[in-house]
Length: 92
Image (cartoon, rainbow, N blue to C red; front, side):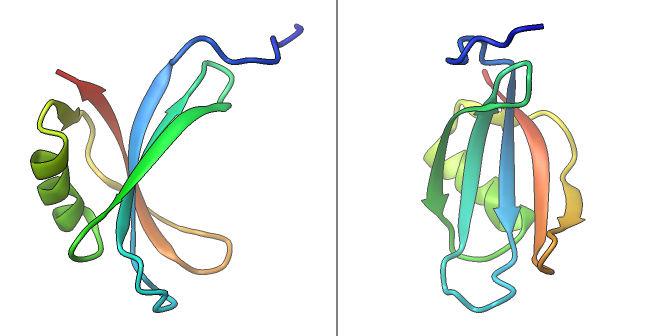
């Protein structure tokens, strides 16, 4: 199958929040959009007051009230040891 060079199908939208494991001082939430082949189509991020899912949920309600989390947060650890969580999202 040949994949077109420019993604046009916004297939999967999800939130990612982090733990500032290495004290960079940048607490944030990312909203990613991927196509059906897993390629990143777009993303946006904003700062939050604290790390983790609870702070992320609070910030989403405040910053993007029409965005809702559609799955539970799933905890993961990056290859370099940083805790992060992902959850699917959708616009109301």
